[in-house]
Every structure is written in structure tokens, then in C-alpha cells.
Amino acid sequence: MRDRAFIVTKFGKTVDEKGNVFGTYPSAEDLVRNIRRECEDSLERLGTDYIDLYLYHYLHYDLKEQAEEVVGILEELVEEGKIRY
Image 1 (cartoon, one colour):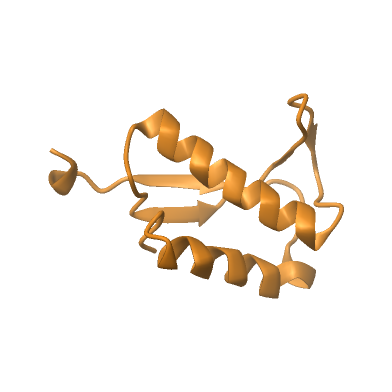
Image 2 (image 1 turned 60 degrees about the vertical axis):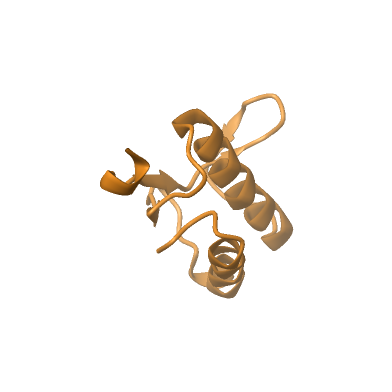
């Protein structure tokens, strides 16, 4: 049935190893690591191999300063087949 479903989910919060949520990304490395972790966690929870549309969920911070890193990790996830768009 996966070919008949279009799965959309989001990313956009910083969570440390203990589950604490933060409003900003301390560094570009933290940002990239967190986006990847959120994607992989979503894939596992959804029980699928890929996400059709992966959205940035705006909470209360801005990623303009780290746009290059965001685009870079999203392109990697596309190349790996984990997200489509």
C-alpha cells in the first residue's frame, strides 16, 4: 500500500540526548545532526523507507543563518532515498 500513500512529516526542533527541547540550534553541526536524527526517527515511527515531503516546521526561531547547512543535509537525505521532496 505504500505506493498509494503520500507521507508528509516535519522537522524543526532541537532535542538533546535526554529529550530536552531547545528553541535554537547551537551550531551548524547540531542542526545537521538533529535534522538527520529527526528524519531517521520519523522513518522508523512511520514504518517506511522514505518520506515523500519533509517540511521545516517553524517554531520560534529562524534558520536563515544556517540555510546552506539545511539545504545540504536535505540534499543528502534525498540522495540517500530517505526523502523525496
